[in-house]
Image (cartoon, rainbow, N blue to C red; front, side, top):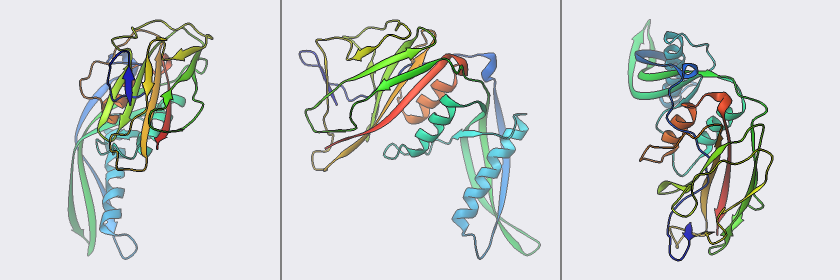
Length: 267
């Protein structure tokens, strides 16, 4: 994507903001050496057993942290090219109650023999946070008229926030990583009033121009994200990745954030 006012180039997408904010609703606990196991058998391959063992290790880490067994995770293994897991976690995090959130810092796999059976073993170190309940009246509604664009097309959309005045950040994720579209040098931070429709770009002299990074590809898939927060909580992490954005979102109390995500294609 190219953002232009005179000449302004940014590879970016849309996200609305929340940031690093420590709160009682999101207490973090470091868990070391949580272990999960799964038998390797004729019907379960080693790879499948390792994945099951990892899930069991996550549950064990959650139990050790004193959090109920409902759990959503960011493992640091989410692919920039495939936002499916990112989308699933983001959707769960921003629309439902989340009882716990785990960020895996390290995972080691091994095998164990017991009573003539082979087991895949996953041992993890992780940070576990307690969740909170959303505010069902606080909603971010984005009217994205199309999901397929040609190179050179202008991206524009409308956003409306219900339930509370809010601040927003806009983010773009492509194959090279993520960028912040809003706020930027030409569109300053502002308070968006509830139940009022806003058109992006907010500066009439700016354009969000769609561009493929790799011209040899027939199409490129982009992840767009919008996040609204009741308070001004800036995103301050220099590395804009799926993982850092999810950590940032989860650091905000659940009742103070609302988010939207869309996958779009540039032909």
